[in-house]
Image (cartoon, rainbow, N blue to C red; front, top):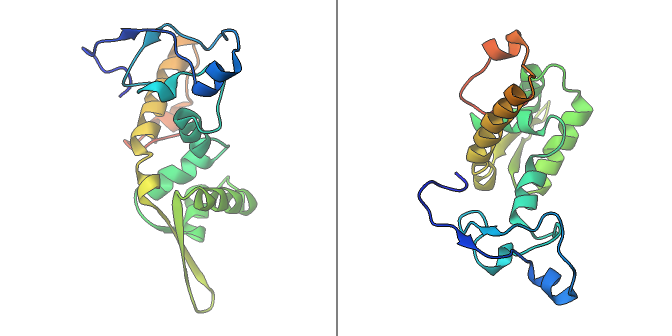
Length: 169
């Protein structure tokens, strides 16, 4: 978990090497409390989003409508396309295909196609995909807290269906 208790925080301005080289003036994302667990070493010194930022990469991996639900379904094991459609009935075949293709291109999902008629396709999380579970669990818990803070609540039917696997709102 980020910012683990009892760890000593260092004070210092965080800058990314590219930001330092450009001589830019501070940005609103600049912070003054150094958290070595959240931002280890020099790589965490940034003033603007960078394409190689690990946090941006992790968030991009789970972004997109339906992506977290597809990941959730695959957390419990390999699934076929039809099974995913059955488990997510409001998700169109087109969007499911797009999400699975994006997750495959990202290295988070592997695809196995079996010959025959019809062709059987199974989707399974890779090791990198399975590694997203703690992130999804933390995002879910954080989202619940944020919804409570702003007075938003999830529909009762959704609450009744809650399980220990990551959910999406």
